Structures are given as structure tokens and as C-alpha cells.
Image 1 (cartoon, chains in turn yellow, brown):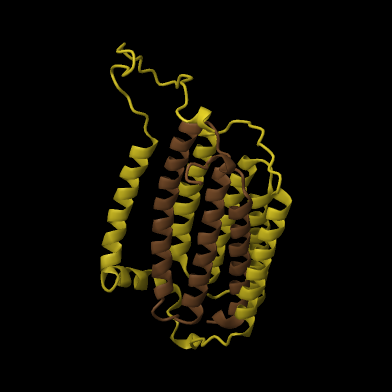
Image 2: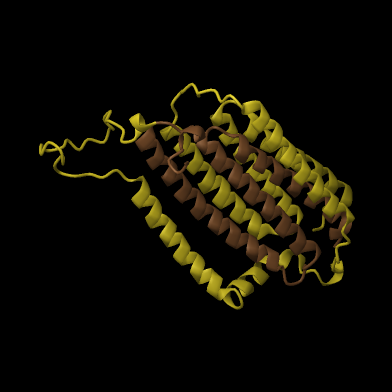
Length: 199
Length: 106
């Protein structure tokens, strides 16, 4: 990348701050809608980090797939299940919070210690391919990673069919219990949920 | 070509912190949609890790970038199926509270 070192460091600092503060916001904010939009910001900043690492193709894929597909899907899910409900209080919530926070902080300190103390065998920057990474990714995908590439297409097909099967409503012409014809309007009627009174 | 200007440790620390934030959110969220968002955060942390190693340690063959592409693919499939499961759960129990999904608890 042909940007001056100072500019790179400034970009990296800003992007990491946006990523970390945005991620904290995703986890901690009360409103789930704010969390979803902050998640989009985090995804965009991660794409910026990829650009700093000379990976323009992966950055574009990140923006297209994460911001364009996953984030929109999450916002749609929030829209479909958005119901104000007052959650039942849990009595041992405080001890749970303490335990989980301790676990996370321990894991974080462990990971950061490994990051800082290990000696990474960095390769020399001379033989870096730099801006031509897209060409190299294409070569990989159609030579030594051909089988995973094809399996990924089958996986996407399976995920698509599975999502349709799971999320669709069963539409029948007759009601099973009464035998009367069912009106098939698009607006969902208030029907008796199957499992609510079990709990 | 001055890729070594930012130390690799900086990228690794960002990705470790993001991963731990994701785990914390996964363990502490009551809303099922937020749990899915935390999983996406953790996957992104892993991707940052892979990309940093691919451009600092393996900067000629960049196999880490190919791995990242595959992780992005699997994450998209996971998000689609996860949200479909969430919708059908919501249709049956009329809540997204993680504490009320206890059918497998004994």
C-alpha cells in the first residue's frame, strides 16, 4: 500500500476505535435497533482494516455480504419480531454477570499476552504481492481450493432451502381441526401459539 | 511497500478484544437477535486475525484471504438459517427472550 506510515497509523487507530466502541455498543445498548445499525458500522470499519492490509477483494466482499446481506437480514428479523416485552427478572443475574465478565477478561488477558510475547515469523515485505491479491485469490479458488469452493456453493443452496423451509408458514386449503376453508390473506391473524402455555 | 509499519500485534489485539466482546454479548444477552449479532462479531474477529496473518506471515500466497472468503460464505449461510430458526421460534413461543427457550433443559 502506497500510503505514508503516519496516515496508515492514523487510519488504523480510528478504525480500531470505531470497531471496539461500536462492538461495545452492539452488546450493551438497550435498544436493539441501535445495536443493528452500529453492527453495520463495525462491519464497514472491518472492511477498512482489510483495505489497510492490501486486501481490496475481501474488503469488497465484506461490504457486500455483511453490510448488504447479513445486516439487512438482521434488521428485517428485528422488524418481524419487534415486540415490547418486559423480561422476567432473573434472581441470580448478578453472579452470572460477574462470572461471565471474569471469564471474558481472563480470556482477553490470555490472548493479549500470547499476541505480545510470541515471536511471529514475519515474511519479508519484498516478495509481497501487494495490490495483486485479487488475481492470486482467483488462482487459489480455481486450483487448490476448487473443492471447498464447490462445496461452498452446495452449502449456500442448502442454507437457502433450509431457511425457506424453516421460516415459511404452512398454508393449507382446509383447517385440519374444523374442516372449514382457511382464508389465505397475507396479514397474519392472531392465532393460538403452540407452546406458550407449556411454560 | 512498507507493510511492516503497523505492527502485527496491533491487529491481533484488536481482534482479540473484539472476540471477547462477542463472547460477553453471547453469554449475557437476553434478546435472541443480539445473540446472533454477537456471533457475527466473533466471526469478524476471526476474520481480522486471518487477514492479518495472511498479509504479514504469508504475504505471497495469501491463503488466509481465501480462508476469509470461505468464512464470510459460511457466516452468511449461518445468519440466514439462524434468523429463520429465530422466526419459527418466535412464531411458536411469541418471545425472543433467551431465558424462555428451555425445551431441552432437564
